[in-house]
Image 1: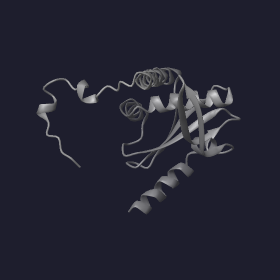
Image 2: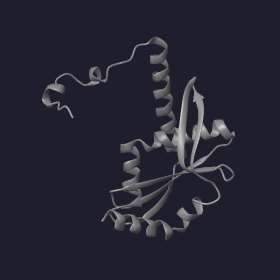
Image 3: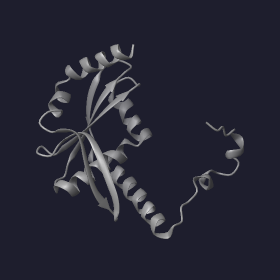
Image 4: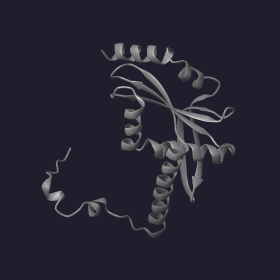
Length: 165
């Protein structure tokens, strides 16, 4: 079953000219590293084309294809954060502003869609990246690491059984 599913996903990407166009002339699985706010950061792009100045992230999803569904997935899973981080790292390494694309393969309907991260989406992601790195840097500098359990509203923890796995 898994092999057959993989074959169907491969067929869908091979039948998607925009995806095929994005996945040529660059470098697959390229790692880049730099620092932001004096914090070392790195990325491993599924595909990057430094000449045409874009990054591609290939995503498989269990949800049906469609822009509204993927827009929700981006927000729910924080894809805007990684897109912004990758673009920022690439900018620091290459000195160029990169576009960011998702090639989305649906395991539900075996469709292939290509989406470009908007300026708005990348701005939202950048704000999340900056906030996280500033918080991390502050924790490194002070040695004070907030306990996430303190961030759970009182009463919420008692309502759920905690299981060890």
